[in-house]
Length: 304
Image (cartoon, rainbow, N blue to C red):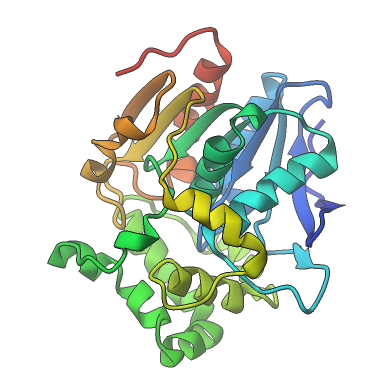
């Protein structure tokens, strides 16, 4: 079974829209998109894994596409605890006890949060760019000048001019970042436009701005997420079987950034650097995502 018509399920806070492919009785695989992107990150991987017999679910994160908050009073937070809790709640709403989780950028962070805090819910993890839980306590330490330059958009979003700029120029900003972050990917207008519609979500700007400000201690978090954020502040290790994928040409997170992340993973672990590919690895090389999931569903993954 494959459908490109969004389904929806309600959690405590959200109506989460998602795409589902594959047999209902298949091994659940949940794939989580990044910023600024959407479920189309996994179109090819979703189809192939469904053909393998997996039940593949790809939700729109909070602030994207058809996903909506249920209550106006709920803080429009994009903090890491909220993203992880959304995935857990999504699984609960669908009655999924355990799943393979895969993601990158915001989606990779959400997957890492679930794997760290609720490892019994995660059969295995595919995380692009490595351990993605934020060390907010250390966020004031400057990085190299080159890395600070890559993060220009984050400094921009810390200003009210940046908030207004995102609201006015969200497509222009996203298109620019796609080119910068995946310099070898020749995406066309149709590919970009299919995803850019997800940025019209009424909460996209607020969720984005809160996310990038919160990670530097420049915006308060959702009080309901305080306990989870406290747990994440300890940078908990991840014990589930994991494969890290990293595009060699990633324009925002250089490949050497994940080279020493093995210390955060205490279970079976492997790291694979993908030549030529950039940040949008699941679009550029969907075969690598598929192979990682296949390998994790197999009996063993060697630690390297």
